[in-house]
Length: 269
Image 1 (cartoon, rainbow, N blue to C red):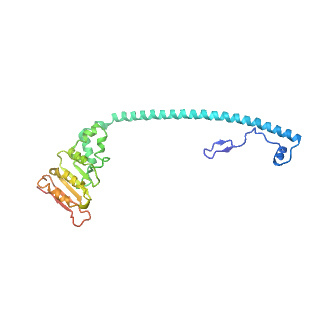
Image 2: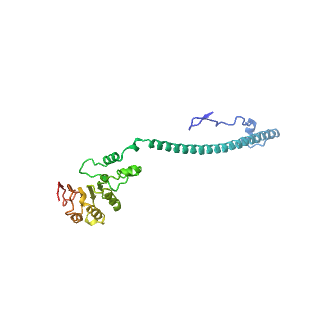
């Protein structure tokens, strides 16, 4: 009896226990080229008939085992189908169970005002002078809270939630920025705008962003610009006389000596 190296079970690798063996005289004849005698011929025919009978028996056993193997395959397939069906039922019931838990969750009874305060904390910057959420990152707050449920979407209709933003140099949809500014209502705006394209690389993206921001200049409270191109000065000139709420204006130097970092606080226009 041998052991399977994979699962350590017992496997029968030895010969069939009833396997006939040749007599020594027959082995000698088979190893040589001498013609067998009459008595040897009779003995060899007897050995041949014995082997034929055993081969027939072995073939019958092989056929029976093959049939059993086919039946086991059918049983295994049916068991797999049953297992998948049970797993599907389990997943469906588990989902229903989670939904029932959610239905009685205290979160459903939180007032909208408290939800809004929680959302505001989620987008609150670490330091006041740095603006909040990334406008073009839909997998971050406050975007993600709008995808939870109807009540959370209602709570996200808080203008203050959308009034503290960061606009990166990564290209995003202008309509998204316009939507965010519309959702911020009349709330004072704090923003940080970054665009690393210089005048030679200008493709109109940074200029378009500036134009949209300038159109809301009356709500600017804390404005921060990290721009290396000079065209933004012309764009900002359009906000002259339209900055009644502005308390801080920052220009960041990004490795260009000709541009200075300027911070102006408590400016009254």
